[in-house]
Length: 115
Length: 109
Image (cartoon, rainbow over all chains, first blue to last red):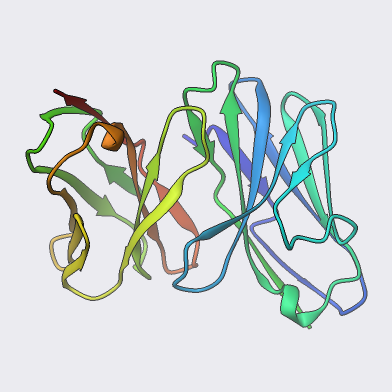
């Protein structure tokens, strides 16, 4: 079974609204979680790395005020897409690293459609 | 249920060739991905196959047979830096990614 759970798997929202995606590690404590974005038939693009209890580290070109990441506990990280636009429509996937850092588990991904 | 199978661990010699297999059973198919992941780091994209056949990219090649639910990743001229985990992932009919557990590849001198 899944060890990292993402919710929702699909969401449709209106332009200008905000949407939150949750990433939970189910069987382990995740000190580090990664958030990715993927366009069809393309590779995962790392957006940011979040460590529990500290601010996320964003990759170059990713707007931190638009993509808010909160990693408040060792089992939960959230990505909030603020003031969403149609170009934000994409597949978002999270992954979580165990305390040892040797293994990274991926969530199932979340499809966001902004209309 | 949906399932991705790949060997847990493989060992190969520097300079040699290794083939990592992946078999899948999913609800529909919209492409198969291979990723490389070094310990403690985020994965990096290697290949994407959606049509049958072999895709070659430098030392790495990926093959897909949709009728057999089978793919392999072929690594040639192995280097020590190729020691990593290799993840196979399939996008199903709902466009959700189903991940394999990964194959840990150990390269010996």
